[in-house]
View: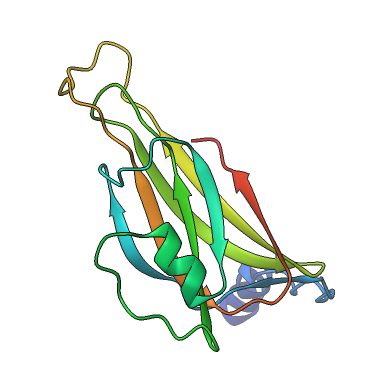
Length: 144
């Protein structure tokens, strides 16, 4: 009788069967490597960029830059532009291929209300490499 009760309990606590898999048209880009992330990009204007050639890379980033093999990789970056104090941040969270478009999701942050910050002009940025994508690049802000 005890064995029967244990078998019944074991059957009741097993997880439900997995839902059948459905196909989607979304693929997460597997490799994303940070090139630069900080508060001093020296970019006065806010912008998001998808860089697919060495010439574009040289024009965008005047500082010492790592070599990028544009036959295999591309650069995506988010620049917040000039900000009046420290404490502003930006982070690229993902790059996903959706219906023929590379969708780059990022989150921008600001210092909290009443937070003490350095009174210095900053220009936050995050630049990463991702596998080369020949199609359009779209940027989406993710709310904190």
